[in-house]
Length: 115
View 1: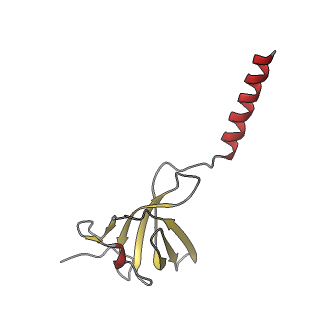
View 2: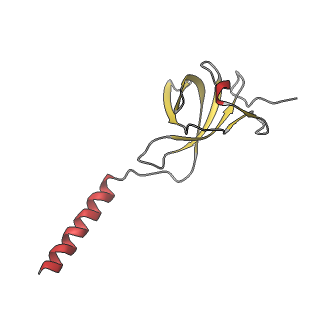
View 3: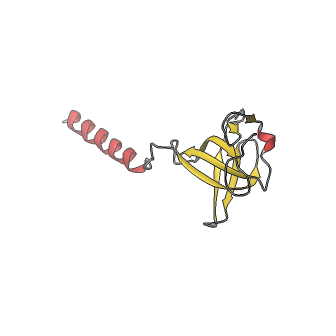
């Protein structure tokens, strides 16, 4: 009798845990817009076309800031309010948006090219 109760309790716990885990997209997404705020652990980007603002978490030693061609890297201090960027992100841990790469764009939302 105790074994049946333990199995039922374990199944109920597993079901409850699965119900609270958010659905996570396995593919990375891209968001384009204007930087509104940067800090050591996050960046906030505003898309003027959709009037949507998204915040992305970044690691303290984040070094994935690139030029449009992807060949030149920049430091985080190059990202200031008013810069156009493209953020490649995912939402794996508890649904928090996590920036994987950031591309600095020009004013036409095209990646910057070095001649």
